Amino acid sequence: MLQLSVSPQASALLLTVRSVRPNGPTREGVAAPVEAAAAVVETVWRVPYWVVLLSLWALFVVPSISLHAVVYEEQTVIGLARGALEDGHWLAPHLYGARFVERPVLMSWIIALLSWPFGAIHVPIARVPTVLSALAGAMLILRLVGRTESTAAGFYAAVCFLTAPVLLPKIVVAEPDLMLAVMLFGAFVLWWEGASAGKVSIGRWSAVGLILAVAGLIKGPQPLAYFFIGVFAFLVLARRWNEVVGLAFAGVIASVPLGVWYLAVYQTGDVGEWISHSRIGSPRALGDQVWNSLDFLVRVALGMLPATVLPPLLVRRDREDSIGRLWLALLLYATCCTAILLFWPGARARYAMPALPALASLTGILFARMRLKHPLPFRISDTLIAVLIGYQLILGWLVTPNFPGLFAQARTVGDRIASVMRADPAPLYPLRDALDLSPLIYVPGPVRAITFAELADVQLPAWAIVTPKQVAELQARRPDLEAEVRLLMPEYQDARLVYVRKRRQ
Image (cartoon, rainbow, N blue to C red; front, side, top):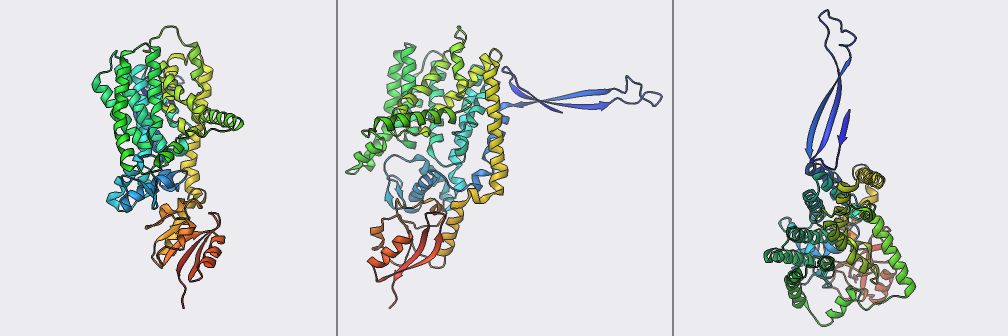
C-alpha cells in the first residue's frame, strides 16, 4: 500500500510503502500462531518538493505542447515572430506584412530567435517561453513561501498556482500573459527579499528596474502597474517613505527601454493607436460597464481557484504578525491593480493574471498558519486541486491524443492549404480582419494579409483565401483574372483557397 504524507512543517514529500510479509517457519517447520502473523514493513522515501513540482509540471505540459494546434492569440504572437524571422521586421513588428506597433512584442522576438537555427517556426518551439514561465513561476512561489514558512507551504502554494483554471488552458499556449505575470512576480520577490531584511539597496532597486524593463517589453507599460501600485501601497501603509525614492528609481530604469522602443517605431498617427490599445477615453454605457465589471469579477474569482478560496481567512489571522507582513504585501500586490481593472472599460480576466502568483503565495502562508485551526476551507481547496489535476491529466494524456479532431483543426487545415499550394508555388494572400488566421501558422511563407481591394492589384499568379461571395466579386471586378477554387474550408467560415492568375486567351 502506498501512502502520501504531507504536513505543513515537512521539508519533503514522504512516500510510505507498507508491505505485508509472513514470518518465517519455526524450528519444527510449522509457523506458530503468533509467529505466523503478518509482519508490516514500512519503507519511507523523502522526495524533495521541487522534484514533485517539476514532475507535475512535466505531466501538464507533455504531450499537449506538440499535439494541441494553435489557439487563442497564438496566431498573432507566432505571426509576429514570422515577421521578424522571415521578413526581418524586428524593431517594428509586422503581422503578415501589416505594421503592428500597438505594443512591444518581446515574446515574439524570443520565439524568432529560438527558431532561427531551424529556419522556420515550429509551434512546440514557440511554446517554450510559456511552459518555462509556468515552471519558473511555480519555483519562485516555492522559494518565497518556503523561506518564509516551510517547504510544504511553498509546495502547496505552487500547486495552487499550477492548477488555477486561468492558467491550465494556457500552460502550453504561446501568449504573453503568463510570461508577463512571472516576470512581474520575479521583480516582487527580488524586492521583498531586500524589504524583509530591512533595507533595499540601490543595487537591488536597479536589478528590479531591469526586470521590470524586460516585463514592459513583453506587453507594454500598462501591466507594470501591478508592481508599482501594489508596492507603493505597501510602502505607504508601512510608512517606509524612504523606499519610495527607490521605487521611483526602478521606474525610471524600467521606462528607458520602453521609451526608446516607442520613439524608434513612432510614425504619425501611432499615438491614437496606442491610446486605443490602452482603452483610454473609450467609456461605456453604465449598464454595459456594470455588466463588464461583474463578468470580470466572476471570471477572475473562478479562474484563480483554488487560490481565491483561502484569502478570506485573513480576517481570522493571528494577532501576532510573525511573517514580516508578507501577507499584506502579497494582498496589496494582487488586489490594488485588479480593483482598477474591475472598472476599466473592456478589461478582460486574463489582464489580471499577474495577481495569480501573489494569491497562490498567500494560500501557502495560510496553509502553514491555519490549516489545523480552520480545516474546512482547506478541504475545499484540496478537493479543487485534486479535481483540477485530474482534469488536466485526463485532457492531456487521454483526450487530446485520442481525439485529435477536437484539438488539431487549425493544423489540419493549414497542412491541407500547404499541400494544395505545393503544386503551384506562389505567395499566399489571406484577407485581413475577415478570416481566422490560425491555419496560416502551418503554411510556409511568403504570406501577406491584405484587404479585398488590394487583392486585385497583387502580382500574379498568387494564392488567396476568400469567402464564396468574394470569389464572385473578384471575377466581376477583374474579368481578365481567373480565380480557380482549389480547396474548400467549411471549418473556417466556409472560406475558399483560390489560385488567381491572368485569364488564358
